[in-house]
Image (spheres, rainbow, N blue to C red):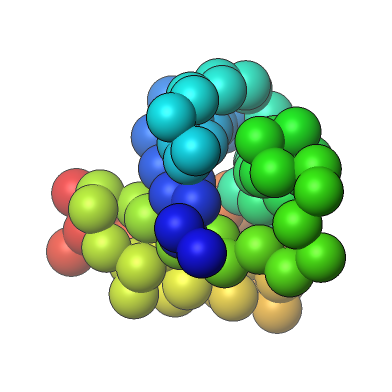
Length: 91
C-alpha cells in the first residue's frame, strides 16, 4: 500500500496542510498544529476511504522528526502566552 504524505506549512498561528496519495492532492487550513493534524486525518480519509489502515507520513520542513517535535510540544502544552511554532532549528 502506498503511503500518504501530509505536509505542513506554518503561517503565523495558522497551518496549511497538503495531503497527497493515490494520485490526488488535497489542501486545507487549520488554526494550530493540533487542529492541522486532525485535518490531515480527515483529508487522508478522503483520499483512501476504503483503506482499513492508512500509513500517513507527517512532514514539517520535509522532516517527520520536526513535525513530531512540534506536534508533541503543542500536545504537552506550553507556558501561558506562547504559541506552538515550528522549532527554530527546523526553519
